Image 1 (cartoon, helix red, strand yellow):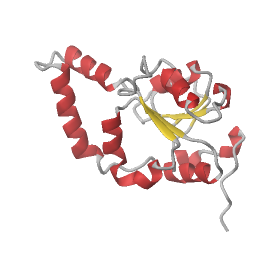
Image 2 (cartoon, rainbow, N blue to C red):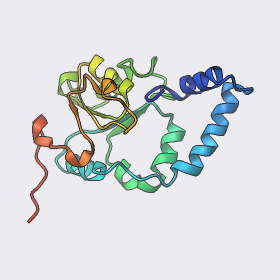
Image 3 (cartoon, rainbow, N blue to C red):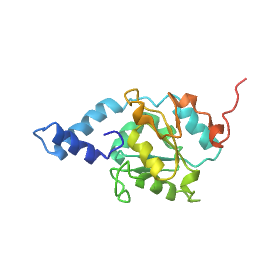
Amino acid sequence: MLGSTEQKSAAIAVNELELPITVEEYLKIFTNKCKEMLGNSPLMPGAERLLRHLHANKIPIALATSSGEHMVEIKVTHHRDVFELFHHRVCGSTDPEVKAGKPSPDIFLIAASRFLDKPDPSNCLVFEDAPNGVQAALSAGMQVVMVPDKLVTEEMRKGATQVLKSLDDFRPEDFGLPPFPTIG
């Protein structure tokens, strides 16, 4: 379910687990639990450094997430200064332009189209943690760096342009971007 819209994930959970509640009730419970658990969640190691580096070098960056706007707001509560570095965000579960969730390429194509210079998809680099997101980026014609959860199998990592254990391992120059400044 990683990378699916909130509505689709909720429907799968309710139906597959034969829960005695509606999808809407499940989403309400899920949202409340997320507020409890995700409000203090840390950024991925290396994420802040990478985002600040790209922003400082005037590389346009967007957030393209399957989460809805309300869920993103929960997640960014304690990292607002970092999330303000994004030029824009596309929230797949609530953005009316996103007709199909990942693995459909919609979300990434829409994110690219909202940049002022409207880059060709082949000039876009996506960072993903979910197999559906990797497939969506590839279907959009974009390169994708996968930083998978430990539970994602080797088979599910296939296809990514690059797979890293951590964003700390990312080397921007491998993708034609300015390298991180050397320290010392």
